[in-house]
Image (cartoon, rainbow, N blue to C red; front, side, top):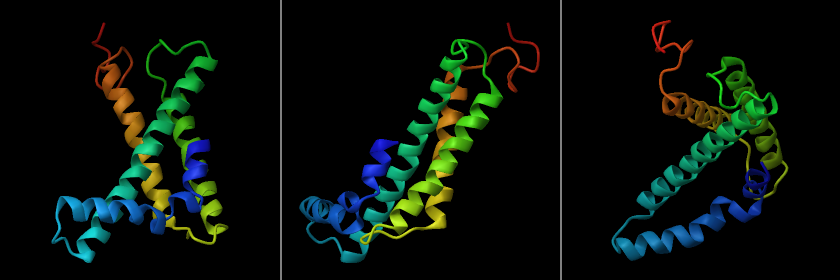
Length: 143
């Protein structure tokens, strides 16, 4: 959460990230248009939202399960729901922080993207753990 907070400051504003991304893209493809650079920058920035919130939800899930001494137990939908709720709430506070930062702007779309990233992180954990007794994939026939 601290890394997300820091990334929401002027340090990772669009102007700052374009200072190293644009020259890198021009080095890779000298004839790249300014429009294409802006498109790539948008994909990279939104991809960062998805990945940072995916990691956040995974860490929240781990913290919630570890605190209950059941981190090796079966999938717990309640823990996943709490992890998603906390990540989504943090996404809202992150946008409020950006609203207060002069070089940034707040966007409801970013909250949605962040929440989708958190959901993706939880889906990846659920898929990685594989079918477990009591999961939706097992329907009572797993061992």
